[in-house]
Length: 270
Ligand code: DGL
Image (cartoon, rainbow, N blue to C red):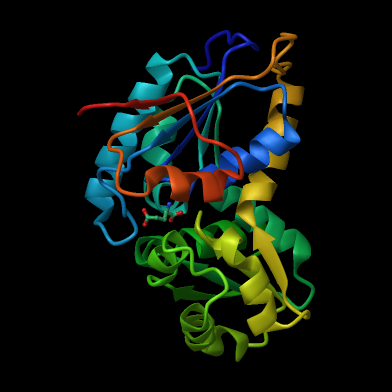
């Protein structure tokens, strides 16, 4: 049951690590007046190669934490958590929940003309089949081709956004998907929007890239408007970051994802 929510409360955005900062960034660009609490489980990342049971357990813990911080809406920025644990998160939540898988699926359905859609993501996301299910719920006539791309996450964290190794990796991963004549490709992972220029180069201009970070920012705006939950305070917006570890190069990597300086960081010890 949804409780009465205070529009001045923050938006809760969460991810397995720093990657979800691409979503926080898209939300802050679209909704500059909103306060954001970001949670990144940096001690336990990556989730994309873990079992569904473990991913759901971690997702539940983070959801409980953010609800205690009195967020007015929860944004599951992590594709892997959205794909595997959306049901568990939703069951637990007393506030509206938006997730990147649903946002990406809806956007792909709107974009495709020939009804052949590709999806790339972590192994856990692809194995869950969540994107195919979501896309086919909106349009059963669409054929979905999925491809796990496990090497993209470490390559992006290394900052190899325009590097020959990443280019060759992308060619290798995308070859079978492109061979299926897709006209739309869903970037089903928090890290992939940073690879957009390189993917564009590898794929050419004929394939539409669906960036779920941007899509979910638009959906967040709609949700807040429909529920009269827009922040009405006139103060500058406030961002708080909670992480479970501060790994080496955390600030550098995080700032690349967020596109601005990272401050106000609290380490949560679990
Ligand atoms: N955040 C994850 C996702 O979007 C990628 C990193 C991980 O494997 O935890 O799928």
